[in-house]
Length: 268
Image 1 (cartoon, rainbow, N blue to C red):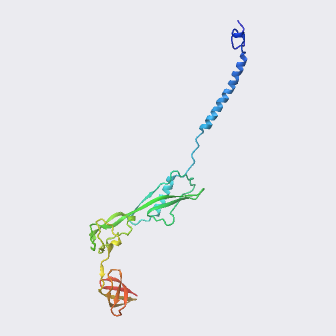
Image 2: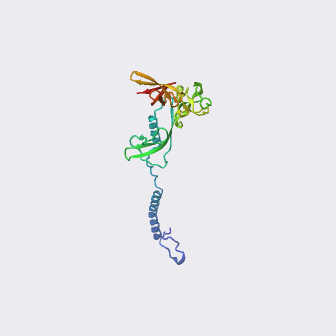
């Protein structure tokens, strides 16, 4: 059997010289040792570049803020019988990032705020790192008020069948409103009123029981004693209104309250 030579080429090639196989083997060994390190460094670089996504920082829930504000407003409202309220809350900036409150949230009303129409309601976190935010809100109150059941002419005296209750938004009734028939029946309209008009005190006037120039009886109550004298009305007046009268005996002008047709009471 021919003897194996430690060569990396055929000795019959040019010049009969061959590179010793040992050099090539040494280079391969160095490459073999470096290979795993290269792969390790590449893997580390990949991990460093991609990274593990960081857990998002905990933030205060805006839904919890809104619910706390809504509950607070509901507890603050004192509604009359048959009234109802509609509470609408606006939204905070979605970019707002608040640390979670460790204790209970504390809603409050800013000074001067009214529980009607548009307003702001504050929500405060007093624990940890304290913060305060303000949520826009609106409150609409609804209730039954008296409205005209037909067109009413100026000067007409209202009867019971001239009015009927209807549900209205109370915040829109800046002049006030009536709930009971006896508060409007017998009063006269100071202007024409279309059907369906919510009635307010500025639209109605009690009928005059005394007219200017009428002869009146002046009733003076002094303790349990009553004294009457004759007088002359110097103005028109409805029941319960004040007017001036001239005492025909003393010629003095005094002020009293119309209580009945032809009677003016003066309190002493």
